[in-house]
Length: 284
Image 1 (cartoon, rainbow, N blue to C red):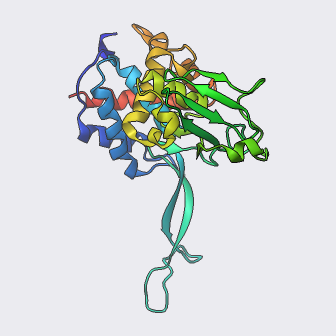
Image 2 (image 1 turned 30 degrees about the horizontal axis):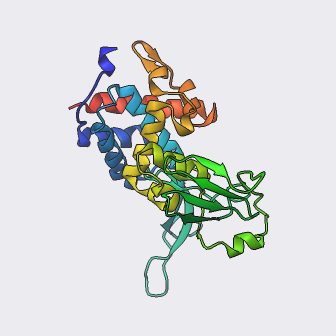
Image 3 (image 1 turned 90 degrees about the vertical axis):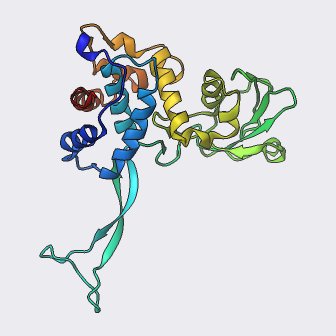
């Protein structure tokens, strides 16, 4: 539909006002997320592949949901009457607490993959051939090509180990760099094999395998999310934005299948509709 066709900039004042109006009553609301949301939107404005406001709205909603994370904040200490407590000198007393807050910025997985088969670190060694060798805690080894394809070196090698796996001698003796591949990004990228494939899909070779914290850089995190949702590669499992949003077709609920089946699909759909309202009002 013509109302959704769009390539251009969005008014930042209207955008911030709309964000606060639509989400300000959310118990996880944090105004400090607004500049991060604007940065993310800036990547979208510059991406000529994005031609539909609904695509942008759903990507923003996904980031909103996936990056709501535990943050430490300082809050006043109150007495039983709700009044500020002070010390003997009259200085206000405060305390630290952790709260689930909207960030709209790339985050690390809470718990860093604890109890999952990708929780433990692996060792990664760059090879003169331009490939890399990956050694897991149980001694299984793999070769990874510059195109992100992995193949077993050890007979019967299988990806992943239990979180309780003790390192065998082959792992301890390996001269690779120890790295961890828990979730990072706007959309959580997990497993070393997926870091390798994702980097190759972005024409970055094995950079993400060799330096997984690069996924926390906003521009790279955006490219990963956009690559998946626009091409169906990686986490999207062949599903693309255009499948759910084209012409008169709008399906914010089923679009969740691109990221995580139907998990919290209704809640994210509501957020996406709110972003659609904000974006339509902020067209400049």
